[in-house]
Length: 377
Ligand SMILES: *Cc1c(COP(=O)(O)O)cnc(C)c1O
Image (cartoon, rainbow, N blue to C red; front, side, top):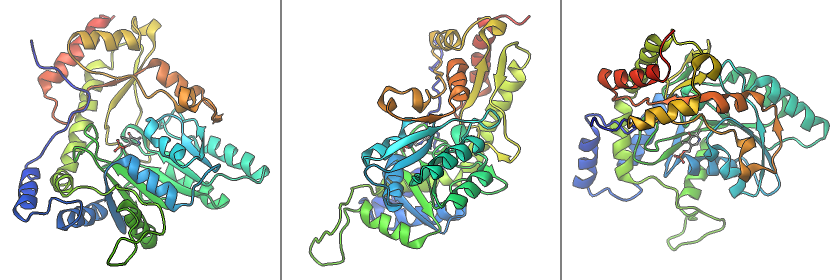
């Protein structure tokens, strides 16, 4: 029996263990010290941000971002509907209310026209949202420019959720650096991983400075422990930062490998009727974190769920497209602008195995299962 193929497993490079050994040799194991400082500086340079804060997860980074923007009980926050729930959960941590904005078919990301309609609606009611959480889904940037312009026009803060999009570009620049604040995730399944972790970035030094304080239990500058506000234990460990430094060295190779997976699937499957691929928007380079397909069951002869089950039977992991947030029971009280586009993607889509260490033999094995679900015409 060949080995199980996972959707998006970790893929270590050459230098991670070297940096981890350095942490051990210098006894910098704690969530403080030179590995973390180096990782933050190297990461900020890579994405082109002025300041970066390494934290324990992408979710922690978003929680801090929302706090820094003043989001509090009863505030409204606009969030992309087609995403992982972690894009919206921290809104609930603060007792704020998420309102969801559907995606457009060109990028699978927030539709600027729907955002414009939502902002106009709230402006007319004199109740603007406190922030917009813009997700760059599956490694593809949203159409950032019109969204930045809308946020500026209405004076609403923009948070970019670039958890899945490290290594992607929008008009040549990294996502995460266009709004007030952005964040990334290094969870085990992301394009690079620290086993678990996140990074908050901003060009606002004060914002990152204060977020850093909150991430380390909000300690005031006294010799004893003095606290004037609520803090969190959100700092990244030195060991995770050491792994992250090694991973950052190979980010470009990881993006290339994932893009090659996509091209391989496209070449091997594009003759099949009823199977289409997530498009790449003209404004940038997708990192192709996950290769996503849509299946028209009448043309393809099987549904996305039939395909998922056939792959699972061959010990190959695939996954449905994110279930839109406006369909989630936990968010049933929330309002949505649009909704039909993401609903269609959820109903018909599938994420194929996309790890950067997939071999040609692995890809051939996956392709042959997909082709055998329905023989080519
Ligand atoms: C993974 C992910 C997050 C959360 O990151 P964690 O590090 O797992 O907390 C947030 N948003 C999106 C879109 C993600 O894919």
